[in-house]
Image 1 (cartoon, rainbow, N blue to C red):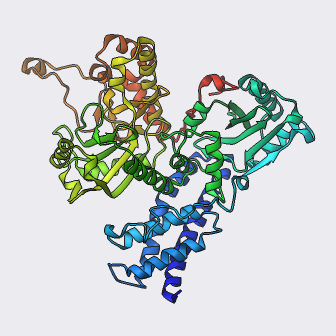
Image 2: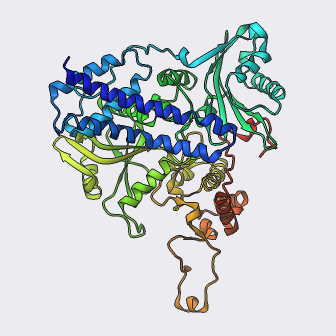
Image 3: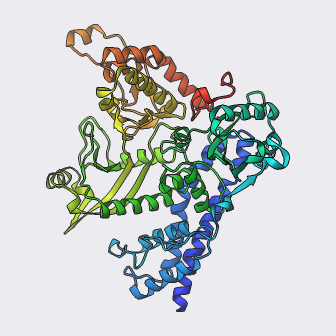
Length: 574
C-alpha cells in the first residue's frame, strides 16, 4: 500500500470521526435541555444537526484538495483507497455511516461519470453482521429477580432523565394497568417476562420516549412509554403505546428527527426494525437523525427497484402543480418532484425561493404534518423507464433540470417524498363518515402547523395528502412562509367605488391573508364545509391567527401529541 493511499484514507476517516463526534456532542445536550424545559434549545439542536454533515464533508474535501488538485481521479489510486478504507471499517461501530461519508467526499471531488462501485460504495461492503450486535444498544431487565414494579422503577431510573418524577409510583401502577389492557396475550407471571430497553431516551419537542419490548413465551410485544413535564413540576408518564400502527406514526416521515445518543446506529436501527418491521431501514435512519444515511439506504432501494421491476414512470395522480413536475413509479411508494422551468403567473417567485422554502421545512419541526423530503443531485435514470410521452412532457416542462445522455436521463435536482392520496381525490371516493373525519383532521393539520410558526400558504385540498392511516399531511412547500411574517386581516367591506366598478376581491398586499375566505375557496362542498365550520370555526376568524402569531412571538411552545388522546393517562393535563 502506497503512502498516498494511506494518507487519503486516513484523512477521509478522520473527517468522518470528527463529524460523528461533533454530532454526538450536540445530541448529548438534549437530555439537559429537556430536563430544564429549554424548548428553544431543543429546536436549535435539531437544526444544527441537519446542517452539520455538509460542513464536515466540505472541510474534508478542502483538506484533500491540498493533496491533489486533479479534477480527474487516478483510477488505480482511488480503487486502492476504497479497498483500504473498507478494510478499516471491518470492526467499526459506525461503518455504514463512514461508507456514506466516503461517498459524499468523493462525489464532491470528481465528476458524476466516476460514481460507480469501483470508486464509491454504491453497494455496501458490509455483507456480514456488524461486530456490534443489536444487544449493544439495549439493556435487559428480569422481573423474576426483584418483581415487576421494582424492575420498571429500576428501568426508568437507568434512563438518567436528569429530573425527578411528580409521582412515579402512581405512574407505574397506571403503566402496568394499561399494559395488561393493551397486551392481553402477554399476561404471564413476572418470572416469565424479560424487558429489553434501548439504553438512551428518545427526545423530540417537549417529550421524551422510552422504547423497548417485552419478551415472553407468547412472543415479543413492542412498546413506547411517553414522558412529559407536569405543569406544576416533575415528570410524568403520559402514555403507553403498544400498537404497531401508533408506533409507526411516532416514528413517521412527517415528524422531526429524534435526538438520541447511539454508539452503533446499525444496532439501534436493527432493534427498531424488529419492533416495527414495516418501517424501512432508510426511514429508521432518518427517524434517529442520520438523514444522510437514510438517503443512502433509500437510493439503494430505488436502484434495486429499477433493476428488478418492470415499473415505468407515470405522471403522479392529482392536480398538476404550477411549480413542480411530479411523477411516480406505480409500484414504488414515492413521488419524484422537479422544479419546472416556468411557473404559472399566480406564482410570483422563482426557483431560488422554492429551494429556500423546501430547505426551511427540512430544518423545521414538521410536527407530524409535513412530509419529509429527500433531496438528490445528478440522478441517473434509464430512459427506458419513461414512456415516450412522459419524456416529451419532461423535456417541455423541466428541460433546464434534465440532461439527455444517450440511454440515460440525468436529473440535476430532484425531491422525493412518500406518496399519499391527494386529499381532493380521497374525498371523491370516501364514504361520508371517513370524509368527515379526514376534513376534521385537515383542520387539525393546519392548527398544528401554525403552532410551530408555519403558514402553509396555499391551503387548497390538492396540496395535502392522506396516509393509509387517514392522517392528513401537507406536502407542497412552494408557498410556505413563517406565520409571523404574514398579515392576517378581517375581510373589508366593499366600498361604493368597488361596487360600481365591479371589483369582487379586496385589495391586498403580498402577505395579506383573509381567514374568512378559507372555506370559500377550499371547501366548496356544503356538507364538508359544515363539518369544517363546526369543528374548526376558530380558523375562520382573524383573531385566532393573530393569537397564534402572538404565541410564537412570546415563545409559547404548545404540546402536540403524536398519539391519540385516548392513550393518555392524564387527559386533563394540557
